Length: 620
Image (cartoon, rainbow, N blue to C red; front, side, top):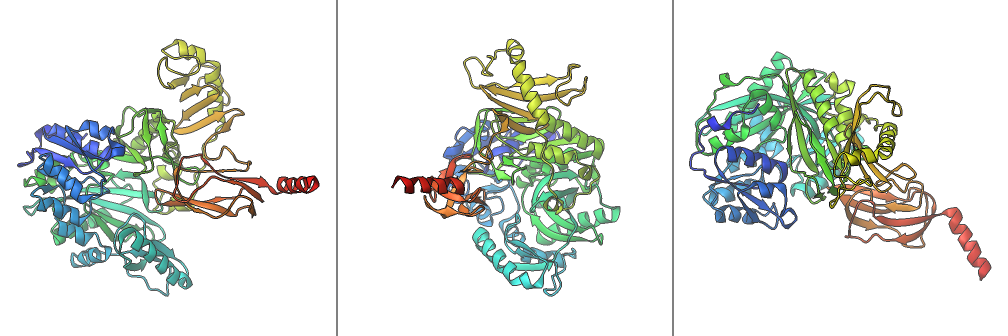
């Protein structure tokens, strides 16, 4: 359990705190701030005017963008805030923002601006690590792959390329440089040895302005896809005592070397082949996965951040830090994980979060999810006496999670958490890039849908539901369908308990079972971006922006020809002809915002086009 913040040290002269962020992290910081008796200020864009984080705060101020430094600082000054907490993402690791906050006479809840600047560059951070005696990834011999080409500025997997053949090095460098320049405004690159099978280990550090630097143990974030974390846990399940001492000691040494103050995370890559650990980078902010550290240490990291920001010494020494049990966190995203991880958007008609788990979220029933911001909707965190107990608790929590009206990655997370590989802690940083998880079989969900339709009157009689699935006088209201009676339903043996959340709206039935969302419409096909499979309609597989239109009405195309390109959340998707034929309509317009499932092109099969031509010629 998190530390009892009522006994936390006071936060100096901080009475009002502005959080320069949105979503679940803003709500999480507000939670601790309220417990400490602080007045809270939210910032929001027009799109977020009615968002949950806005309602949570005592005061809300509109800004044109969460990235507008001047507007955010002005909001802090005008609202009477003494301090600004940046959360993560947006401006959290922008040195110019920290300087602007301090220039306005306010407290920045984070490290000094010059430290953010130094540690924000991988090349500068590498030199500081070397000075601190911290092991770093060996520089790559360009003649001996595999190599990793990566941007010196920024992170998140942008500007990174793996090179396995020396002949492809120059092309990889050019591509990484272009991407880095576009993302960070800097095309400086590093070339290092690429570790084929590694584990991502990170250490939580805390430092005050009085010379104290401690660590709160380590986390394992190896379960990731394309350098984006999916599951995080604490403590790291595979570390030896020697490896643990190396990474925690190195993290503290690095923080001391750079003059760090406040909370930060030092990341390492553990080579599973050699057992060696190397410094990767330092994140100069609170991490998304900080709750797992809170769960095993019983400490409130935000309370500690605020105490340090208020000029207080750390209230704990290294000898006071204890770990209890095991904690695991998963990130719930608005994405279709089993169809290319495509971003999703729409209205979450009904949201049910699990009991018995910590859920940091900003998603409620009836809320509209757009692609304007990061697709992360929530974090589900579980804690148990050991790793297996925590893993089983995670599976149960994901079984209880249901988001209707919008596809999320919850079913994917459930499959992953229940897998033998995750159970055995055998997943390295590239495992998800080498393996495709099997999509859940829709058979049972279809049986559940049929059962619910057949029994809809019984569920309607039990509460304020009409037989068509609508709440009287309100929006569609799903029901929980318990299949725990000794009756065989499809493949279920008698006495097996299965539960699902079902919404019935006319002929359309939506089922969430084991976290996975299924939508059935006559003739029992799964709806969504693939509903027109086999037809000539080429629909938007995700909500986003049309970047290119490469064909015109009347053009002949071959199967697989690219008709256009669209983008959402920095992911580009090519829209291809489903078969050889003729383009009969083009609704896509460059620059236009399109909804999920919107028809963008239509293609007529070659045979039909030839028949139409023959008929036209005959009529002439």
